[in-house]
Length: 263
Image (cartoon, rainbow, N blue to C red):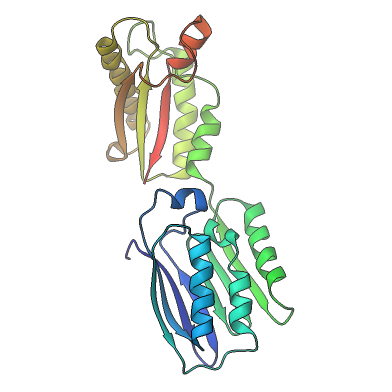
């Protein structure tokens, strides 16, 4: 399937809206995504086209909207274009790998959503935007945000190593065992493991040490069943501290491993 996002308008006996995509981006993610929003199908008139394209442009900000709509040849339910436009709320940008389909007065939701609360809220918001003659069928499946799961699992802890080496301590191994369980739970496509050090010592030596530690973590994850091809290691040395290195506590926090999900 194309990596483009697609929203299509279709018509059987009445006008309908079909929105399907490999991944709907949230407003925050849209700032880094470059895929266009492709809109296709048939709408009853130019006013409907303008209203729907305008609403999608507002929802997706600077994303490029590709207008492939055709006009005419369908007879929609009363106020169909206005109802569809109202139902295209910011909440739809939470959908991943799914569809939003309008067939007359039937609205069907499918795909992935980050939480049960957002699943229910999206259906409620769409129903509230429509009149009572519309029925919302909610088939969205909850799929957790993988990065959030990894971040919460690691929390404020650091993966510990022996002083000045890339040898894991028992406490470090215990944390990695928890991270393995979290990674298997969310099944991300790829993870970048980033090693960091404090500012003590020479920068180049710290970069080398941070890379060695990241590779140690990578090797451990592979030994526990995470596919090697999904894991990359990077050594950032002392260049990206999270707090000041002026105290022992600060230096301890800066000697850390990060797990970043890559798309």
